[in-house]
Image (tube, rainbow, N blue to C red; front, side, top):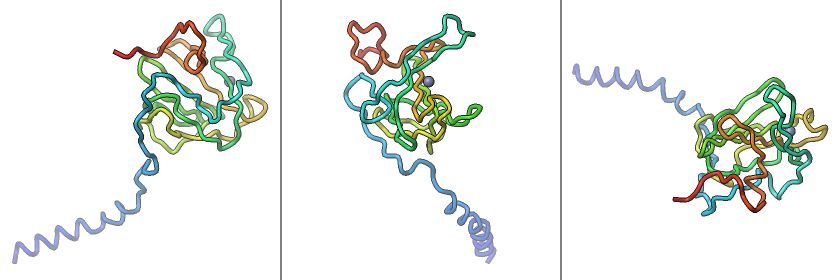
Length: 177
Ligand SMILES: [Zn+2]
């Protein structure tokens, strides 16, 4: 008898939790993780290959103004594609625009803005995967665009180094062993 009572008490403590577990949508279930293409090259973060509407123009000194990335022509809600494998490092608002940041191997970090995502920080992503979308925030370009910045450790580098075939290549993200 005591055993049955314990069982009933156990069931009663478990039951209220069930609707809570069922109500919370599991994050990122719509993301299909695919194997990365067998290439060490980077992809453009927009498809088809976008026009570069503003070039990389790093400041002479870190505290001066400049353009620490490239601006790519694109429309609101257009999909942002992962240029390479990585992990979502940041997804949130910075001042007046949503920013999406991805850590890649080799101390490389891509930042996209204005870009929104449903992915959470720490999510592993694969090269070519749709990771977000361009948000409507036309303040940076005058029209809608995607700003793409790449940092290697603390230095901003031109994203074109990774997607454009400009031989001789001076900076490779990493080498195959
Ligand atoms: Zn820009």
